[in-house]
Image (cartoon, rainbow, N blue to C red; front, side, top):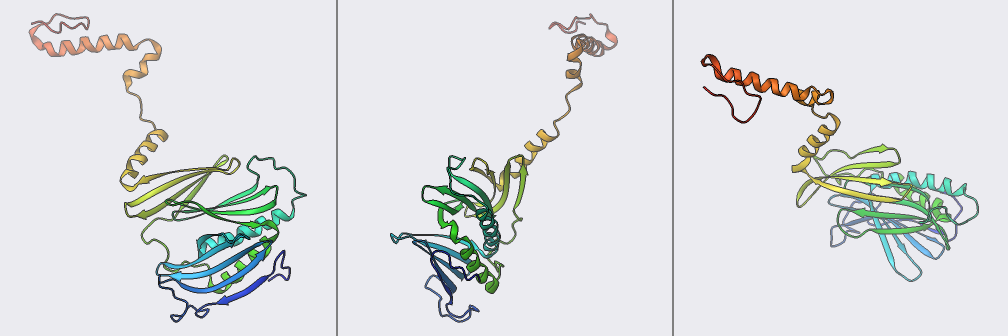
Length: 292
């Protein structure tokens, strides 16, 4: 770990109930077992990094306590925590290359942004700037429930990253049995300046596909949820856009002026066929039809 303690200092990892997670010590009434915790202070804020485990697997809880005592938190699967660590390195390097603070070119003050996705959760990482300085905002969004977030002062990103790295080195980045079995892996597509995320999840209503659109430059995010019963219809609709059905032959002749004449010829031919050998009176395609 770096000796540079930034603005505040730090407390080494404090195992609870044994670093290996064995035994019943540290297991609360809710069945959550606390494996280890770290605390560091950055400016006037205290941050806690807690590794925990429940019946669904191992996870990380990040909590921020401000000077007023108000606490906010986000939770991540261990695999998502690994992605967060990698992103923290990139944000810290980007921050180190910035010049003096100045008015941001973007109205929302964003300097750099990234997104981590895991099952039905999204984590939005935004390095922002306001009149109080620069900071990294980590926001957690789920299908249901309000969005939660913490804000880390930019000068403490390296300390935060180092503490997180040591926890991950000890407990790993595997989710154990925390994933949802039998569901496809998430996918993502980048098109022009947009990123599209495809995530399959399950709730009490059944299985669904969540399609999210993120425009990093504008900072806009939107999503739709498609129930499994409608997947095939969405696929068919997309197939028609990609491979439109061929036009009927009658429509092909409309552009050269021959369609109308061909239509009259077809009516005459049909009238002759219906009349057979019993004689007929030709029509010009009017409503009278055949006369015997």
